[in-house]
Amino acid sequence: MISCRRLFSNSAIHLHENPLGLPRQKTVPPQIPRRTGPPAKRGIPNVKKVLAVASGKGGVGKSTVTVNLAFALAMLPSRLRVGILDLDIFGPSIPTLMGLVHAGEPHLTESGALLPVTNHGLSTMSMGYLLPKGIDTAVVWRGLMVQKAVQQLLFDVDWTGGSGGHGLDILVVDMPPGTGDVPLTLGQLVNVDGDKETDVKVGSVIVSTPQDVALTDVKKGISMFRKVSVPVTGLILNQSHFICGNCSTPHYLFGSPDRFHEAAKQMEVDVLAELPLVPGVSKDGDSGIPYALSGWNENEVGGKIWNEAMKGVAEKVWATLQRPPSHVTL
Image (cartoon, rainbow, N blue to C red; front, side, top):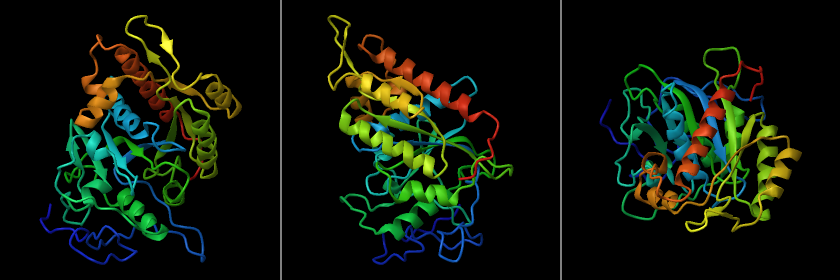
């Protein structure tokens, strides 16, 4: 590990080929495609499997689901080594949800790779760790800068923690909402489901709420992942209903889930879970303690249902990612 500072927070100008200001590395990562030919692809170093968590629209609880699903995976009997990568360049939420808002800048390895920031036993990396502290810094970048930043976050993080030992069994990626540069960059640069040891198995989960305006964007999200050859493992309906403490009857505050299930059937995608609206999920997320760790209080109405549903999603996702390769290349 070396003590030199990165250049992001103390440089006024950032070149588009190195937006995070990392030291130059001897190994050249795959490049964004040019007109001269297809891009070079490779697997993510020290990562065996990747799960992208996405949403067509912002504000549906995608980042909260990402963090809690990561912990649900880590708590499976197989004791998986799990990490979280925040690829929401413009609105990173992982530092808040993981209680790492005041974390310092990540250290670097001797080769110039970023070392993950850890809390609650899980390794994480986020654009939020790389921004100046104490001010509301906005990332105002055009597409090429975003693509290169995503490239660096994918390939320039040492998920062994600098030890050179075991990496991750699965990396859970918090994608930005929408269908823009980030998923396209992921699809252009990462080898998926191939025969090489450096290839990784990738799946995706799409999060939505019951409203029709969100459901429309779910269909776009499914179409997007299919265009870049990323398998859609399933859908999660968040804030599906509220369970009253007096009558224990589900109340569908945002509309019936029937149309969501109809759309899933039409798109031939499984519904992995319906998560109830539980106040503790938001409260614990704001405090930096994921509900999967703190929310096993059976006295909170819906809490046990929420956690059991998330555990079920983790089991289904891991079982799907364990299946033999289908020889599809991203």
